[in-house]
Image (tube, rainbow, N blue to C red):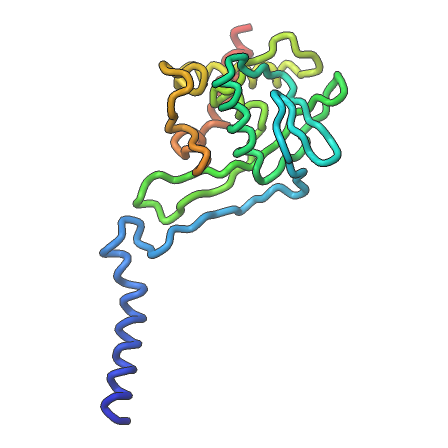
Length: 212
């Protein structure tokens, strides 16, 4: 083997080793490219084409969200519509149809962004009850006059609202309408706000049930 051949082989070996070793020393995440993870996608989602208030519009169907009331303030209403467009980008599935006809509890699969640079995962997708999620991020309140919901469903929505107030999200922010860290349209939901949300809703709903 001539000298040029040996140099080429050496360069290839050094480059290969560096590709796998250097990120551990140069990058906080330890990888060249952080991953986007989607391990449990919706099985048969309906794609949403537009949003009109508390109603999601698909090609052949409309889904009015049960048990929630959207804000009347124009700025907050626009932010709520934007939130719904982002978190339903992967489509929705019906958890349960309710009466009156055309009202539903829906499932969505929003993108959760990982803000920490030490994390090798850049974002992941996770399934949520859309009605609860909308309330938990402060873009709707509980419709206490809604019919068709079970006692548990009422309590879970009330728990979501209590958490939104506690964390000052959306309309409960000290400056409603200002830029929020919990939700950024270009990135999705902040992992710090979404990670244990469903467990917190369940726990708070149990407390509400015990108090009544």
